[in-house]
Image 1 (tube, rainbow, N blue to C red):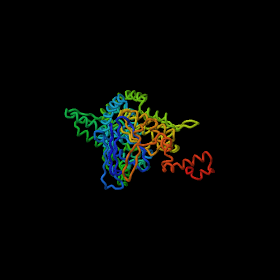
Image 2 (image 1 turned 120 degrees about the horizontal axis):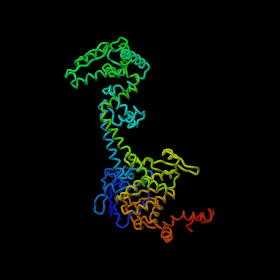
Image 3 (image 1 turned 135 degrees about the vertical axis):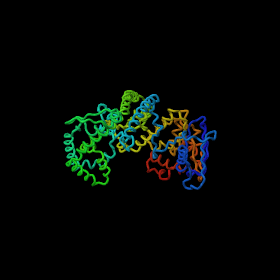
Image 4 (image 1 turned 90 degrees about the vertical axis):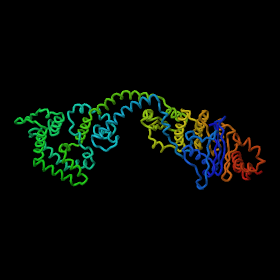
Amino acid sequence: MDKVRIELQNCYGIGTFSHEFDFSTQKAYAIYAPNGSMKSTLARTFKDVAEGVESGDRIFPSRKTVRKVTDEKNADLPQTTILVLPPYDEFFGPTKETSTLLVNNSLRKQYEQLRSDIDKAKADFLAAMRKQSGLRKKAEELEREISLTFTRTPDGFYTALNRIEEEVRAQQDMPFATVDYDTIFDEKVLALLATKNFKTKIEEYIKRYNELISKSTYFKQGVFAYYNATQVAKTLADNGFFNAKHTVTLNSQTKREITTQKQLQELIATELDNITNDADLKKTFTELKKLIEKNEALREFQKYLCTQGIVLPQLANIDLFKERIWKSYFKANQGIYDALLAKYEQVKTALKAIEKAAQQERTQWEKAIDLFNDRFFVPFTLDAKNKVAVTLGDEQMLTLSYTFSDETGSVPVERKTLMEVLSQGEKKALYILNIIFELEVRRQNQTETLFVIDDIADSFDYKNKYAIVRYLQEISENPAFKMIMLTCNFDFFRTVHLRSIVPYGNCLLATKTGTDVKLSQATGIKNVFVNDWKGEFFNDKKKTIASIAFMRNLIEYLHGDTDKVYHHGGAGE
C-alpha cells in the first residue's frame, strides 16, 4: 500500500473529490478541514469501505455515487486494511480480534485439546440423559438442572456428579429410570404438590400404603417391593431361566414353586392388586385424583399416576424423589457416567496447571492497560479482570476492573459507578483505551493498516492530548502503518507536524467550493504570525481586519481598556 487513491462523486454531500496519498516515503498525512468542508464525509466513506457497505448521497439519494478507494495498482483496498478511529461521541468498542491479544498459542492448544476431550464426554452424557429422561431442555439447561438437584447452585455440574458417584456405584437397581421427568416436574404439578391439602392426602396415602406393604406376603418395604419383583421376572425370562426348566421357590407361610414367567407375573400382579384395592387406600387415591382433576392442565399428570403406581408414594418428598430419579438415570447409563467422571479427573490437574501458567503470563492486553495507566491522567487505574478466561478462550471479551484513587486512598469500583463520578475529559480518556487495544492487535500482528483518524484528541485537556499525540508518534514509526489524520483543530494540526509525525509536505488544507472539495498544501503551520501575518499585515486587508481582536486584547493587557487606541479599534491608527 504505497499509494492510496480516492475518487468520490455525490458522496455524503461532496460533489467531487479526487486525491492521491503517497505513502512510499512518508507514512502520515494531516488534513486541516474547517467545519463543513469534508472531514466527517471522508471518515464516513473510509468506514463504509472498511465495513463493506455502499456509500451514497443523503440529500439527493437518486444521484449516482462514485466511490473508488484503490492502491497504486488500482486494486480496491481490502476491508481489513482500513481502520477508522472516530471522535469520542461515537462508540468504539473492542472487537473479537482484540481478544486475541490474550492468546498464547501453546497454552491455548493444550487447553483446547483437553477441553475438547471433556466436552465430548459431557455431550455424550447429556445426550444420554435427555433420551433417558425425555427432557426437552437444551444441553446447558439439562446441565443446570442436574447441578441444582445435587448442589442447589446452577453451576456445580461436575461437583454434583462427583458428590453422588459412590452412591450410584453402590446402587443395585434403578427403580425410576423410566420416569417421565417433564410430567412430574412440570411447574403446575410442583405448585399442586406444594399445597397443604395435597401434602396431607399424600401423607395419608403413603402411611396406608406402607402398612399394607408390611403385611404383604411377598413384598417387603425397602428390600423387595413391586419394582424389584417385576425386574426379577423380566431378568429371569430374558436370560432363558424358565426355558431351561428352572423354578423359583417363594417363601411365605408355605413355600410356593414358580415354573414359568407367566406364573411369576400373575403372582406379582395379584399381590399388587391386594394392596392397591384396599378400600382405605383407594379412597385416599380418589381424593388425590379429585384434587388433580380440578386443574385441566394437570390431567396428563393424573393419567400418568394411574399407570405408574411406583410414583405416587414418592411425592411426599419431591426433592428427594428428584435425586432418586437422576440417580436411576445415571445408573441406567453407568458406562457413560463413569467415562465422563474419569475424563474429568484425568484433565482436571492438567487444566489447573495451564490456568496457573496463564495467570502468570504477561500479555499484550496488560501491556495496553499499563500503557494507559502510565500515560493518561485520570483518577483511576485499570486491570484485566477475566484475564485467564480470555487467554484460554472461555470468554471472548476482556472485562476490566477499576480502582478509583484520591488523596485519601483507593477503592475498587464498578464501571457504572465510575462513569457517574468522572468528568467528561476523564471519560474521553477511558474511551481512548478501546482504540489502544485495537491498535495493539494490529501492531502485534504487523497488519498493514491505513488508520483514518477523525479528531480523536479533540476537547481533551493538554496532558491527555499530549499522551495521545505521543502514542500516535509511536504508531507512525511502525512500517506497517499509514495514517490520514483529519482535524478541524488547527492547534492539533500544528502539533502533529511539530512532533515530526507528519512532514510539512503532507500537511494539507481542505477547501470547499460549492460541493467540490480539494486538498492543497497548508501554509503558516509553524508560526503563522511571524512567518506570514507579520509580513503581510499592511499589504493584506483581510489579515489586517482579522488582527483587530488580537490587537485590542494586547492593548487591554498592556494598558487597560481605558486606553484611547483600544476604543478606536487597535489597528486603525
